[in-house]
Length: 303
Image (cartoon, rainbow, N blue to C red):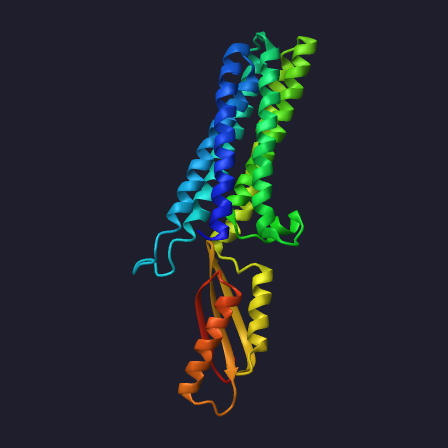
């Protein structure tokens, strides 16, 4: 298992077990307190559990070996499932939360033992912070010296982007639910509880759009990360047998990258020598950038 895949798997498992425990606790609290915010949060947590299952399924599917029908392998299938998670589960969770809030506004119900909900929400916030800490630990292993914002903008790891978005949305939702349920408890006005459910839905939809936008670029086709492209350029520039690099092309396929380059070899190089030089160059490229799964170097005398 590569570092990319290992970090994704661990982050997914952190989130799954945290969300499963939270979902069960919220379900009991929602039934006991009749809280709309709590019910919205319970649905959100169950949706998050489904998210993790789909992400894990996509990650494992992406490890299938290449075949005649899919000569570049199945790496991009993880992008598909990440996109499904972002669009369907996030958006459906958000829309349901808004629907539940509107329903509670139109048909208010008195809260029963709201302090139970507050305790469960506080417990859930702690678990979600633990899940977020686990995801950030795995992200930090991959982002190097890049800032978090730069990593989010440049990473090709769809699973970690989704898990990060989920965890942040979950914590925001939990805090909102706690605040609005607390206001409803103090004032006795259940309108606060309904408004809290609507706010949670808005947060989920905003996060789903943000994550989907990031995943969309990977589905369409995106180059390797900037640091990887710089490393490739450095290897090509340092090769004594390469006189000029006309162009390079990289394309991300899940954890692996395809590289194609057109270069000018030393004048007078025979075909046999050029083959040996290119093979040696490709080996150096893969040693420097292990994520390169396919490497095609074309010798030419013009672009």
